[in-house]
Image 1 (spheres, rainbow, N blue to C red):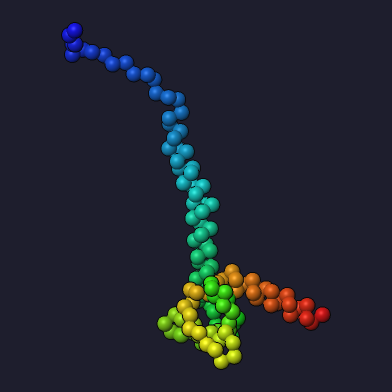
Image 2: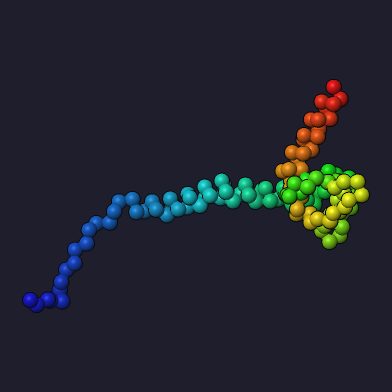
Length: 117
């Protein structure tokens, strides 16, 4: 059996719809951006703003669940909080939970309005 250099290899026709694949991937990236990346970036921005606006006298809740009142904001990015009478802790600003603090403030507001009735 002898092969010649003019051997012809037959290939099948390309599958239909192959031109839509790049649009599919671009669509997936857009969906991921709007449903995952953008909301996360927005939440981080809100948390940073919340941490920067904390002032002495505010009641806060840390990520660990410690409740306290800010007594002093230090220049090095830490807060001194009073957790009970004359018991103070120094924590990082990033250790304050925005969600738990807002929820505790909401509960305290609801309890004070019920007590006023």
